Image (cartoon, rainbow, N blue to C red; front, top):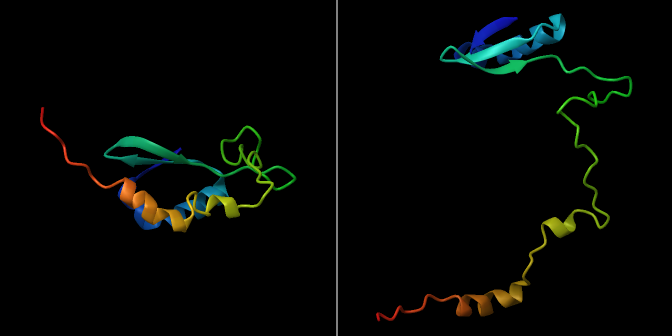
Length: 97
């Protein structure tokens, strides 16, 4: 298994990716001599999806929205109520006991 320093990996990332894809040999990237990550080729099944035991894609299709994704970006509080909320949220003077 080949080991590459982080600085070299940064400079040659695309070339190293091509080498891993061509040879299938993993590459370990180190930072200050300590192994940080390992780059390996992604094995795919006949259906073109990542292997089921792989962490990549294992949660794919676990979350489905029946109403679409519009509800994720719509505001929770209508815009008309913002002014009212600002009035209720004004800092209050502390009374010393």
